[in-house]
Length: 563
Image (cartoon, rainbow, N blue to C red):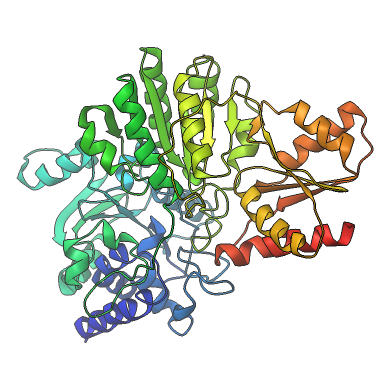
C-alpha cells in the first residue's frame, strides 16, 4: 500500500511540475523517505526540517496541501520551499542550504528546557548541504542532544558535488573503525536504500528509541522514477516546463540571450586575453552559465561547493597572490558571506570582482531567494564599487572595467532574465568608474534608474511618448561611487525626480538620491520606486514588479500623475 502511495505521489508531482515549473529532481528522489518519515513520526508535534527545502514537495502533499499543489510557486499559491506561515508541518523556513542541523538542535534544546521528553527532532540534510561549513558547526555543538539527522546522499547538488566530503561518503561503507560522524559523538547508522520503504521504517523505528544524537545515512537517486530526470540530473533539478511523457523541455523562442549567458561568454573572452582571470563559484557552475569557462579553462575555475563564506575568502586569497578572481554567486546567497566581504576583501582593498547573478526580484522562488538586498548592503562597505548594467553590452563593458580595476573590490549585479540587445559581440569599451549616462532629454520629469529598473522605465517611456509626454531618463550605472554631476543635471533641469531600482529602496538608489538632495539643498520632490520594506513572496516577476510599484505600468501611472 505504501509502495503504491509512493508511485501515486511521484506521478502527481510530475503531473503538476511539468506544467507549473519547480524543483523536480530532489523531490522525486525523496518520495519513499518522506512517506517513511511521516509513517514513523508525528508532525507537527515532532519537528521535521528539510535541508534544502526543495526536497519537500512530497511532504507538502502528505500534510494537507495536495489540493493547492497546482498553485505551486504562483502568486497566492503554495511556496516551493517549507514555509511556517503556510503550514504547522513546516517547522522552519529552509531556502538556503546547511541550516537544518543548527535549527533542529535549537528546537531540541528548547524541548529539553521545557521538559518535553517525547518530542522528536529530525533534520533531513542533503550531501550537497554538507559542503557548507555551517552544518559542521552544528555537528560540533550537538553534544548529547536528542536529534535525528537523516543524510540524504544522492551524490549531487545542482551540478556534481565537488571536494572531499562526497568522496568520503562513497568510501564510508568500505571503511573500518570510527567514522567522521561517530568521532563527533553522533551514532551512525547505514547506509540504507532510501527507496526501500520497509527498510526505512525499520531503521527509523530503531533509532527513534535511541537517546542522543543519531545519523541515518540514506542513499537515493535524484530524479528517481522519471528516466529523463535520472539521466539528466542537472537539467531536471529545475527544468521549467517539460513534456510529462517524453521529458522534452518546453523552450520558447528566445530573441536574446540571458544576462548569465552573456556574462559566461564574456568572461571567456576576457580570460583568453588575461591569464590572471579565474572564476570561483559556490556550486553554481551551470546556474551561472560557467560551463564554457569550465571547459575552456579547467584549471582556472573553482567550484567550492555550497560554501559562500569560503568562496569569498578563497577569492581574497587568490587576489592577494596576484590573480584576478571573479567570484560568481547568486545575490540571495552572497548575503551569507557579508562579514567575509568586509573583513577579508574590502578592508584589505583586494581586487575581487563580485559577479552577482539572479539580482533583483527573481519571481517564483519567493522570499528566500529574492535578490533585492545586495545593492543596499554593498553600498555601505568602504572601498567597494557597486555597478549595475542596464543592458548586456553595458554588462560586458563593466566586466572589462572590473578586470582592469586594482583599487579594491568591484561588484556587478545582473538579473537572470533575457536581455534587449541583439548583438552582444560588440568590442569591449572602457567605462569610467562612477559615471552614468543621460539616455533621453525630456520635460518636467526625470527618471533616475539603475540596472533593470531602466528597462522597466524605458517601456513606460515608450508608452508615454505615444501620448506626447516626454520624461528624461538618466541611467546611473553606478550606485557607488555615485555620479553627482549627472544628478546635479537632473535636479537642476527637471521639476520632479523619480528613482527606479530592482532592489530595496531602503539603503539603495532611492535613499542615495534623497541624501544627495539634502546635501546639495535641492527642493525638487523625489519619488522612490523599488522594493518596499517587506519580504516579497513568490509569483511571476512581472506580477511582483507591479505589486511592488515599479513595473512599467506603475512607472507610467506615476509619471502621468505628475505631467
